[in-house]
Image 1 (cartoon, rainbow, N blue to C red):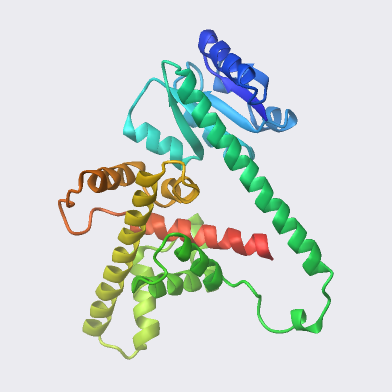
Image 2 (image 1 turned 45 degrees about the horizontal axis):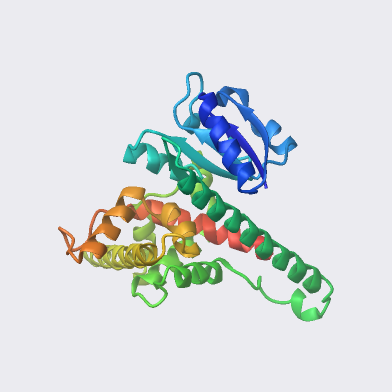
Length: 310
């Protein structure tokens, strides 16, 4: 594994490099003292697998640097900081940071986290190799059946796989979520305009109208919209519950690591884990959940799966 360390503290850079080399985790291919000194070209040219970057730096901080790298750098990112702000940590996760190392540097913590990141990279590479092998085999099959009918992997199939992964395929709201994916997939012009997703109101109104017909009364539409929204929220809440349970049992669980920070806010996941750990009931039947974020991530992940299997 090739590492790159960005931190304005030379002592921290030296400590991290020493841990990486002493534990034979890989090689430190480069260092810098500020985010402004790196870009995706440097990292890609050096074939960096893991970037360790400080949150707070004088010229360009870690969060801003990750934003700059987000679309081009394909390696993993580990944030480093002495700041324990939940908001900043949550933003780091949302931007693609894999883990968060707190200062002062603790050798065991660094070793544990970097080993997990390395294991994840190796797992992803193994999966990619399998996909490539399958793709090569399928390309050799020129049977007429492949020329007929729709794509083998449509958006509903991809969505169904993700709902299975999240443990909510059997929930009432799962069909509603699949209908939402189909709506977004069949109407790309709606969410391509101004690069925005439709509002929840627009999504649920479309579902209600498609189910009841354009002749349905306003009262019937409102009733169907509310019922759909409630089913979807309950399904999303169950996904949160499932992921929190996985994280509580094993923080390094692959599904927890891969999905929790994508589909939910860091604070929501931690709160639910605390509730489960203490055996306490939530203050309200359904806590505040970002339904639109969940739907958006579900759609983008389903699209990604489609692209991989096409």
